Length: 310
Image (cartoon, rainbow, N blue to C red):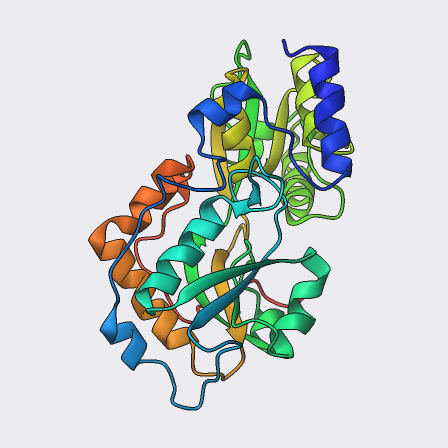
């Protein structure tokens, strides 16, 4: 089990909004600011030609992208504590190269991206933004990844799979308060109790480090939260493993999309670029590099159905 000191350090770094990386993590994932292993691609003229003539980029010759560096492997800070790296920055880099432009990543706090995008401060947001019908009223989307939540258990757990409500009956499950994953578990619990099954006990902790510590110490049977950071934790420390994933929009489907201003004329071009990246295999390279292959989309779409309004 990880030492008490290392857990304390992880919790402290989470409070500061960064992730403290041990040498072991850096050995397996590329957290160097240079990103020497990042995939590259040639200019995609078809995508460039699809950009609306009325669209104005934030800077000439630049593709300016907002990203919230919240957790590896999606987006975090490199070992220089300044460069943003991860799967979303890699996708941003490939799109910029496809459009024949230099990439400028602009780190932002998650609540700030809508205003900055609407005001034209940046051209797009590539930061794990899920497609919803409410967001589609103000923004366009080009989908690039499945939105998945994952169930993870200790390696010595007897739980083989959690894929539907009955599988979770009677379990103590850690999740995030006020989140989509909590809503899924509450609905599962309603269905289970209506069917006469044992209730699910939801447990809440402050952050992922505390979640994992609670799981490893036996205070819970499973964690149910966004899959990417949990897959990262499983790959890096080998103490937990996945026993199932559920779409973030369950019982519907919710994909993650590159977000652009509504009607700006950029989204169709980005969707073309993404589909060409999928066809060339570069998209798969990025997801494999960050242990997110399970979240691959077979095809990018412009403004597909999203989570309905409440």
